[in-house]
Length: 454
Ligand SMILES: NC(=O)c1ccc[n+]([C@@H]2O[C@H](COP(=O)([O-])OP(=O)(O)OC[C@H]3O[C@@H](n4cnc5c(N)ncnc54)[C@H](O)[C@@H]3O)[C@@H](O)[C@H]2O)c1
Image 1 (cartoon, protein in one colour):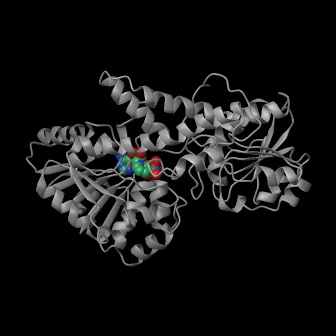
Image 2 (cartoon, protein in one colour):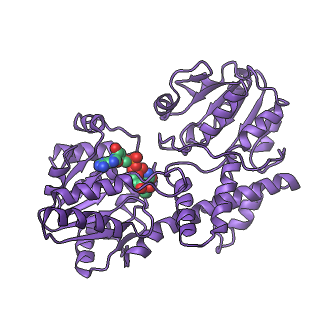
Image 3 (cartoon, helix red, strand yellow):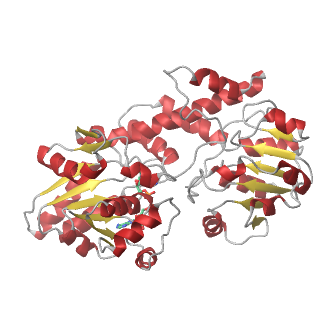
């Protein structure tokens, strides 16, 4: 089958590569010329495990190409996926400019029947807007061309995106046209063999399902972070509490890890966009507001612990920071907690010696070269001469480090662990001061600070 994908980011690239790997002929269209050039040279602009292999395989087979030419894209595929970004527009609501620009481009070049599929995470009602944009341009062109608009939200996780796409938990098809549902079902057949994963529903429910999923996951995290803060105040250990509640099958162990806040390109903006949609519809979404507020506060917990340990004097202190990406196995720095921590440390006069297995270049692209940021090639290099170690992202390589080396490299044996990856008793026995989340030494948090930029 012939497929066109607008947007070659985390979602578009993975979708294009996986569909091409299944035998389809895929054209990926992006407005970023430099990105398209890199992709055509065989360079993969993002870090995503397994992606390079399937892109190379599909390119070698001649089934995957990249272009900036929207007209060629519209001419190519029966299936026209929109997988461009929908960032926070500044007021919490999703910015639909890129999505609607793609819709207009499709309208400009449409000549035969096409299925336009919104894969970007978009507010309820966006499919109507996409249809309207395309139709308005067709009317202006004086053409009558049939097309359908389908909502097909994406649930892949960065860091496991290829696996998630190949073996999805569900494939949601939002459409009011049974024939279109069948055409989508056919496209997804290679990813639906093990058991039935396709759920066909109306467009608005499909659009809302994506936000509901992310809001639920964000709620679990903020709930656990709230409990962790309460545990600290009450002298309980949140890790015991986590196991105690996870054992209840109605609660379960998944996704109830306390930490220093969620980030990334999805949860923060999607929770805010859902709040904005609800507000626009006249409903005050109180749980969602709390989820967002708790998360913004939680992103400052690490700094508060560090500041309190150094009695408020961080001027000239060197902090080793392990983990920059918003979570392991990705180089994505969007709304990463590390950014909140680094910026707070810099404001207080501290110097950050940071290490991340893959996100160093992304960090350099955001902050440039600055004297208070040292980006290190190895985890050990970040420790050398630092006053203390802060862990923000739970990369596997941090889980079982050489504690003797950490102790001898740091000026003082102190670890601030934002992901609770070590055993407090072990570290105490080894002579460390160990500050984790919701386990022991507490810090009182003030009101929610200003939110960070995306
Ligand atoms: N990243 C994730 O894990 C994830 C998961 C599920 C859903 N989503 C959603 O998928 C969408 C895309 O997310 P992403 O992380 O892939 O974004 P991204 O920022 O990585 O990529 C977006 C791409 O779209 C391109 N683009 C912008 N305007 C364009 C246009 N008019 N025509 C063609 N290309 C254009 C950009 O140049 C960029 O390459 C968002 O709505 C996001 O919420 C993301």
